[in-house]
Image (cartoon, rainbow, N blue to C red; front, side, top):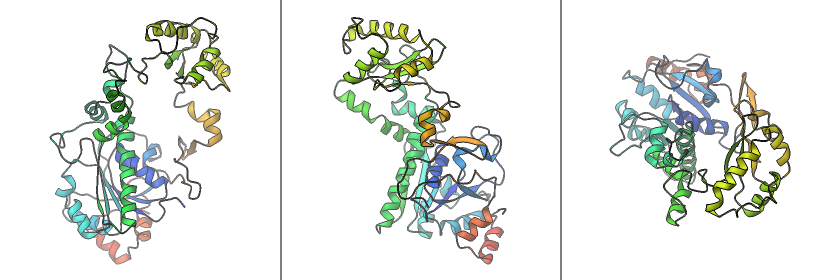
Length: 384
């Protein structure tokens, strides 16, 4: 039983960060019902082949409801009355227009934690503007520091806005609000905005700027590839090794592993010598394959690691030993994290098809036959 076992989460179908945040709650044991549209939209998010490939949708059961029907709000409110958490990722005002905004929901269930996931937040000049991860992290300032000097910023997949600054922030806010309710507090709204979450992830940079240790130009700083001992290097076979030898003792082991300990290199922190260091490191790494360098640095505290592809990472000895990845329903995917010593998380069922396992969810949430029949009259759909 996970740490959130016993908590009920009602999720309204969305893409990206909201499903990821809800996946984290489900992995930790929360009982999640997802309200899906009766028919899948054809222009929403990336395309997948079937529910099994929807990794961030794991651990739910599904009901279908056409929220555009006026009577659908009553069925949704009946579910809200039995939930501990509501998660939605619509544009601001959408749930209010459906009769399901915070005022209506908290009136029905005063202990409800109402989680809202957007890019720009619930208020502000851009609140109603469309956007995606890259737009949000651009406005946060974070994207400006990612990429090579003199080139365009590099999209860091959609990890900074959607998932780190979005879904993860949402899940944290929901759990914190649940703690407040458990201590006797009232339910409340959690306004999670990706632009603010991305900025939070960059907090260290604002500290470095304030202390004069960050320059507003890429590849000029410690963490952006500006130093030759915090970067990636191409190997003989066209693969890459990462170096993060920041501290002197790790740097010493790094240059020893490269065979450059007695090469008369410039001091580590001498900026004037960095071009020479980068040239020597580049030439050294190009002399062997990635696997050969892994063998060289095996057992050394040199802060060196290979760049693995998504298909390679699960097989790495460390990841395999910890069980960091699992194969479930024919899909290799990350295992639940973080780990709890007393109430371990577990991988839930695969993502449901629309309405799948809905009847069992209604029964588990305490609805009797009469209540289920009434909800069906209001448009709720389900299969076994």
